[in-house]
Length: 499
Image (cartoon, rainbow, N blue to C red; front, side, top):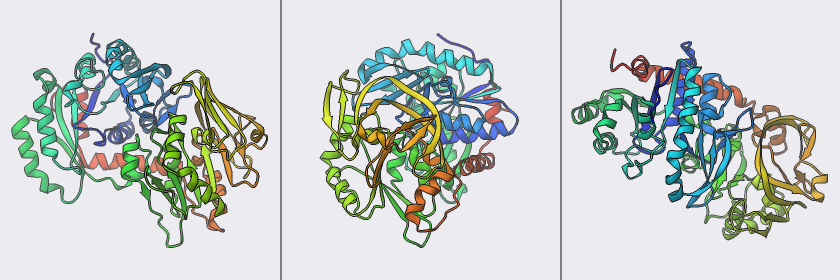
């Protein structure tokens, strides 16, 4: 089954995972949008627990939401029609065009992929009908030829939609010549013919030193280099797509000489929606430390933030295995504060029940008993953008809900926030422990400033999160305009080989 695009389109595939595809597509989206084109981002299949809610109550990968923002568009379920949200090492929840389709183990999913390809093509066609240019992002790498049968994420989709391809390679990890040449070598002739060129990403130092590398790649593949992109330092100011990037940059160091506010986040195995941390990481006097399993929670934390999770009960069990429950009690004895968001809020309660086996075997487990509430994991899944106010500071807040749990109990009589006119969350007596279901609350500058004021002792940072994201997208677009051939890419997207 093939479909011809109704608008110029081009697909960006990586020589490996985490080479910077998502960020580059976001930057290109902003650059081409500034040229007056109606640009739309698209990723046929994504795997991420960092998701965004669309205005119509669907969900897509957070990276596609950022790319939509770069285009000046609201996020749309057609931008990421297949989203896999890992729940265990073997299986994932499958989201199709924004809605829960089911769950499947990795091996079973391979049998489903060809039944999902028509949905991906349907979404792609709808986007192409209203765009001047569609920027398509692959997933992982086409070099994983052991997964080529039934592929809908890379060359399989490029073939079905008849798309030209540009490879992206990460020079910072080493072996970049081999990664480009090797990817080209393992593909079959028809797939190689789709590749129109490549980009070298994350270069440090004098770009001219790679001239011989370009010549070596060209002599072995016949491919043209469309740009060597220097390291974009400000990338840390944009939301990361998945936990791989978060693990590499686990600590964001404060920029002031004074003692920073230290926020500690336990690295849950199935951490989800960790973009909640991004506005905090952007504060110049805040240090956000992600603590991996096997290490204790630092004793000098001001705040321990329990993040979202795709597998609340399993992550709570891991939390205890790491001894973090004991560390958390010590943190509270020292006067520290605790905040739980979504699954983190559920963990702070007395019990979590999963009678329908939504996350795994049916059952009930004890929570951390720091809030007098209990949670039952049940559907339907709540996916909604929301706004309201924080009851402790009185500040306006906005964000989104994305959960299946229903939480009740005496603790709810002391709600943490008000969302769309109704109470949500809980605050323990004394105010040290709080939780709620609203993701994205720290993106509100006024609320974030008021919340952190209790730690700052009168200091103010003046950080402006949303404006910083916009400014960074513009600077990324400027960066790409300087260092890669956008005109050539547009020719390729229109189906031409070269100007």
